Length: 325
Image 1: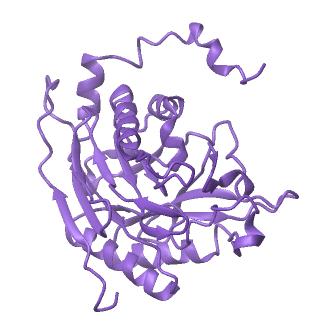
Image 2: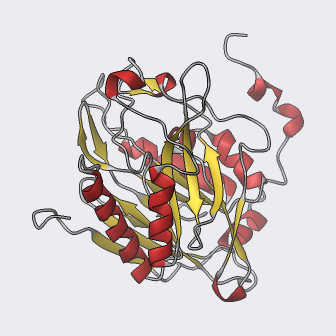
């Protein structure tokens, strides 16, 4: 970062709040998780340096997993319906492209798992790629990758002209187990992306698969056709509500800054299964968030309010109908 750029604010929540529904002691230590909220920089080297500095700050606070924004190394390019050629967007190879190379360097340097996002090449005839989230370990291993399932189609966010939906099936809601430090069991993550966060079905599917922490790399801000409409409160409410309904911690990693015609509203946060915001970034400043997640709060809450075991799948057929049928 240059001398004129603000240093990121470091905000922490290293003492988990009490679990009101707890009836017995937790069985695992907390997962200390961090995220980095940043703007995009046109200079690739400066952009990577800023993100790497944020990862190092989170690691210095003891984070073992650090999460980054959607399309981590790119501008948010889906601003026009004219497609990738009009904005010079180039998909990259999942295993040899710049994003995984960056994540591997940072994971090894800081000794943490790094979560990142990229425009993945699909080699399909229609020219569309995937919007893909990855998790890379400190040993350089690609631990997991998930392709964004839901694709927005709205002014300023013309993602259907760039990305194909991730395929349905077993790969769609893949849980990612990670060992906790000190042999204290494991945490189970889910890696959806941005627009996925609006869909209660997705959070429920991940929860049924055993995911305890859902991480949403995000690029959301102003609405070009509705400049006076601030969607940030709705965005936060729906994510937190989906976490309550499914007993999951929610990690929303947004970007900041102006990328015409959009102004991104930051406000990245981490919430718990009780709907409490553990820590939150400002709307317009770089920030590093680190929180301890008491994973057994999920157990406590879902034992008191057993949403998953009192479902009625036999009554949900309307949810599978395609609109217009």
